[in-house]
Image (cartoon, rainbow, N blue to C red; front, side):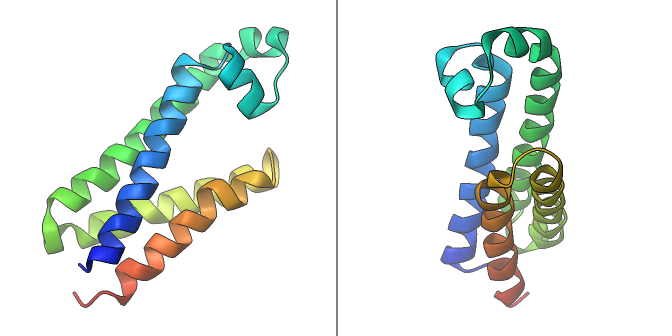
Length: 120
C-alpha cells in the first residue's frame, strides 16, 4: 500500500476514534453539545444511545487499524471497513445531518479510492 493510502486510512481511523470519544465521554459536556448542536436536556436523555453509537465508531476504527497492521494482506479488511464507514456516512447524511457527508463519508471515499488505486 502506498504511503498516501496508509495515511488516508489512518486518518479515517483517527476520526472514528475521535467520534468515539465525543459520543461516549463528551456527549453531555460543552464540547459535545457544541459539536452536535444539542440542548443539555436532549443530550442527557440520549447519552446511552450516543455511547452505543460511539462504541460502533470505535469498532470501525479498530477494523481499519487491524487492516493496516496486516500490511498488504489487510487490504480486503480495509476495503470492507472503509465501505462500512462510507455507508454509515451516507446514511447519517440522509437521516441526521448533511454535514456527516463531508465529515465521515468524504474522507472514507478518498481513502477507499487510494486503497483501490494501490496495486495489490
